[in-house]
Image 1 (cartoon, helix red, strand yellow):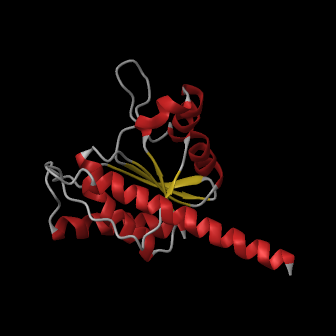
Image 2 (tube, rainbow, N blue to C red):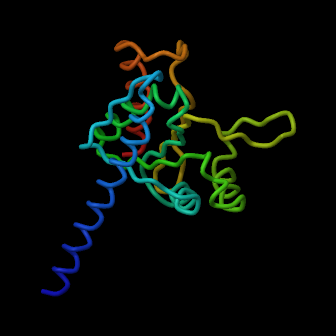
Length: 180
């Protein structure tokens, strides 16, 4: 009986934790709606914020989708609603990491993330790998099976049209199918 109560408490705690993350995500993104691409995040969706260590661990061992994004980045703002729909429709976990926060976590942890993604990242003129936003990775059992950087080709710093959102959904959905 104690085991059942403990398990129930753990499930409830994890559910509340994820609920707090979606509320945090919603606040971060929607608070910048004035003068930016408008974003409306559905509280029924789920997202889990990861720190640097958790991100490296996810990329090397887990299954799901991870978004490297920034609420101030117009391209990230243009894709988040569509990405949430794809994750939800495919019953996949959506993880989130904002690379601009790595300074708080230390360069060593960030180096582990860049190391895991190095095959997918562009380099600058000095040969250093660059992690740009938005960058979405589709991971299955610690193997990256798909990647989509940016928005659609026709993105021009404005909100996507319904047709463009549908095109983006199709791209993400094809990659999500590789994770299942």
